[in-house]
Length: 92
Image (cartoon, rainbow, N blue to C red; front, side, top):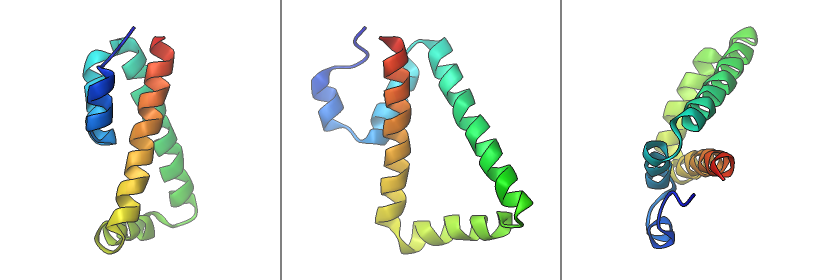
């Protein structure tokens, strides 16, 4: 099952590919992958809370976006790419 044109994939950003896949891939697979992401986020937040780091985390999110925008974008893009890979692999 081809979810997008190969040419389109090379001309778009990881974010654009992510949202394109969300709209075109099998809905059940997309739902499961988003649920997996939420589960991982829930565990990460719990770990931060248990260590008293939730406020420092929120400060770091804001700080990193402002002071290290390239690193911040790279990390977001990495997550977009990983998620698209997980969805596409399950659709094959």
